[in-house]
Image: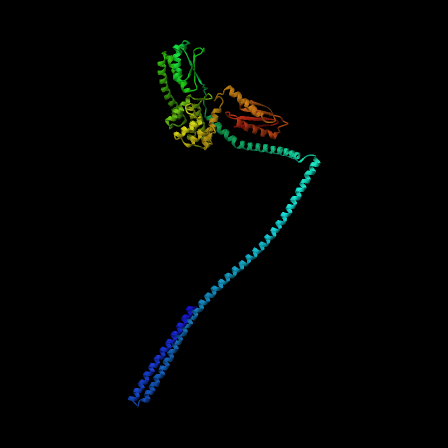
Length: 535
């Protein structure tokens, strides 16, 4: 608006200036004409009329021209004013249109806000009414709970009066009934779970284990802590003893074994827990008998010579075993350690042959499971290497084997397998679990290991004591060399559903309290038989 006003003012000022300029021009022309007339009157008196006529004509012409020019200027000014007015009107129109649009939007927003306000107001009223309703309901519920509590008390009193039972006695009856129902449900669920697990896993596990066992056949040679050396005649015993016992004392001190010479004809017994020393003593004694020269110097010479030869044989045993298992790239020190296992026994089972068998079984199982066969064979082969030096280094064979595997930078899977094959640590791979299974399978084969009669009888007695420690058990019998325990229960104390639960409890107690090879089958007999396996 200020710009428009300024433009109109400038146009009017221009018109005024133009008008003044035209007026001044006409005035100057008029003065010039008058001067001309005065000169003409002086010069030519006779032509005065003519001059006056001409002056009048000039005056009229000037007036006409002045009017025409004035009209033209006015027209131009009017045209400019009209144009400015149109522009201003257009700008006013656009602004009015924009203002109308803004006004419309504001109106819509105001309408929306009004609607929201109304909705909020209605919701607030609804919430108030609901809150009041909930308050009323809560009050009614409290009243009803109080009434129910009173009725419950009256009911209990009436029931006690009618049944002549106190609340505690009635509760005991209900708990007894509930316990019986729960026992039935638990037994049913246990049977269903066992059936489902057997259906899914038993067939596959049996196939894998049977294939592994069929593909792996091994021979077992029972070894003891004594070695027998046969003599050509009983006269050789005196030569072995030597003058004042010098020969036998030298042999015992150099080899570290006990040489037992008794009344048994043509036999000398070498006794010692270290099989390598016992082997050195045996070879030495056989060479002395064959050579015939038996004296302390000769004994010392042969013992040292046989010790070196046995070291070479130990390395050869280790290399042959590593080649057989498919691990020829073992560190030379590990090969020597594994060769020492040729002279180590566990419950009469040769540990080197056991290690080879475990490696092969683990490889077969790994192949069936889709695992790394070479790594499984290597881990199974090395799992018991700590037994080779457990008499020389402090610690269990598991700890020693794990430390040596780390020292010689074996695969972490192999290290964990050695550490976990007796359950000391958690297995971190499938191969570790497979090696533990192969170890148990190799050790539990019939004839694989020997057991002392005392340990055997103690295990049978412990089995029967565990079974008879449960309430309701009438008698128990350990069968099949302690691999099965049969339990007879009293029918009045143990129901059919409780038979399954009893079998599980016996199994758990056996697992927690006894050490045993393989599995023990638990059979509880009443009107039905519930069978479970302690693994």
